[in-house]
Length: 391
Image 1 (spheres, rainbow, N blue to C red):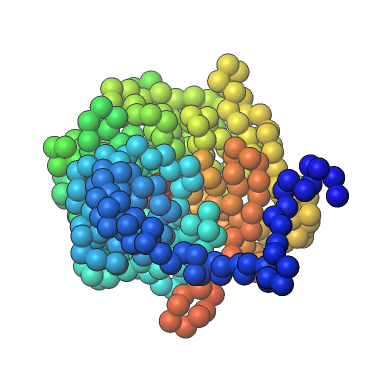
Image 2: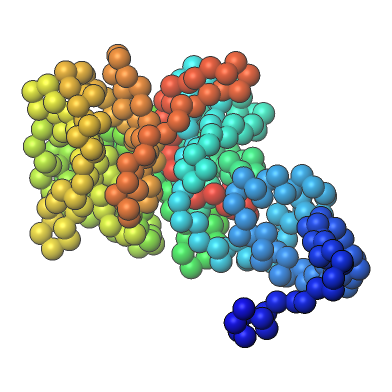
């Protein structure tokens, strides 16, 4: 035995058995644990506790709330609201409605790849509403019959009806929503094909009517607000609407009230196209169809040339499944992470696309818990979940 090795070995007395290893379970039991519970955890700083909780995953936080009243009451804490505001939410959730269950919402968490089924406020059960826009953790709903607007936080189930409007809302319109950057609150706008619009400001709790600039070509070729193809995108205080005839984009600055129109030629053989946004970049998502082939493509707007540049497309293996089929596409969320519904008589598929990683992922089917029946997702919108957003 070398000298180096002998130094690391313990000599045993003849006839004496080697010492037994202490079990892990036994090692954890001792005075040290009791001292930690008494002198450390009991005096754990409240602000540090809120800092940790604000960084929990959304689904974990709601299980955490059910522990005791004190933890559940953290939602009403101003300091906890500030902690939540400092935590960036990298990926949005998706609030969707399933076909045949008009007022049964389903929320999809792309990180855990799970569906959640929240209970909506009771008074909404008597209405036929659909999500049309979102901002700051809030979702804007439109009542099909009364043309009334509602703003809700899907996580906390808090909801309110917006004041009635002096101007009638037309069916062919686009709806947008943005958060006030310099102060709390939000704004909602709807605009119709005649260029008439109204802006709701939550700080004043009222609608303000207006009309687009005279240099904007009328009538505005806007899609129907109720078919999930009219989703707007927001970059700062500016909202962007899809426009056709001529093809392009219509923008509105919610802070200054300025309208602009950009004529941008659409790619050839394009159908079912929608706008999206990622990190301030304007993205076009559309279904290219030629002869019997179809494929989903991604374009980014080049600010210098005002032209669309293709940056990605769906994997060829997936596109081959569309061959010879009449495929329709609708967008269920367009903020940083995209969710698309692709359907035909023989197929019904949900996929997500991450603009930053260029990753395509198939979404598991949405199953309604009572009957364990797989549902077809009809429409939806993306929102960044927030514990503290107030409608």
